[in-house]
Image (tube, rainbow, N blue to C red):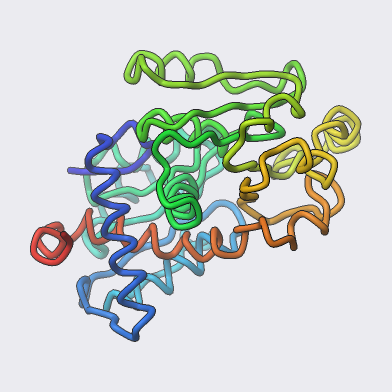
Length: 311
């Protein structure tokens, strides 16, 4: 059974097939065409963390594909009222797939262990594969392609940065993380990327000015993620030189695009002038969460439709 716990679960050609499908469905939606590809199929959304984009994009995308979704929060008692085995296998009797937004990556791995239904990682502490797919779909639209492009992430080497490093390796992009010492990406994750994609162009530097000098896109995220609130004051001080502002943008090429996975703390990791500028693709990027995930859902649940309808 096919799952998407990390982007290691798929091959580069499969990723590109998903992205081709996403763009095809986006173009069809733009002219009012909503083919019921997943008619009568049901998607469960099993969330341990609050969400705007992940929840709404999956629910709306599933509805546009002719299916339906169920939101499952704390009330279902996942991990509390019964064994993981019973919970997961029973859920698989009712739904066609599940999106899990979990506090720990082990939780989505546990769901997938039983092969009761396809499991999609909607965010964990390790990675955020659906976000990364939306990000490269955005780059494809705004830059014409992603191959050979240089994506620079300014800030914390977090779950989003790790997914971007991996997807860059898969798609022959160059990826740079500019971060303070001690906030680099996980070494084990990078070792795994290097073993699977030995030609990957990934670097970690401390100087954001130098990093963005050849950037095709500059990406940032909040300095303090959910669960790190006790570190907020320290992080504000450490990351202050890594703000994406007009001074940093002046060091980048004129064509450079700006990305942020949202929610943003305006005035901290990014300024209003940059997030609202003509170089910003942030709103399109947020919208592409739905389009990328629609492509993923169709690839997981009705691959035959892709073979017949996507060039």
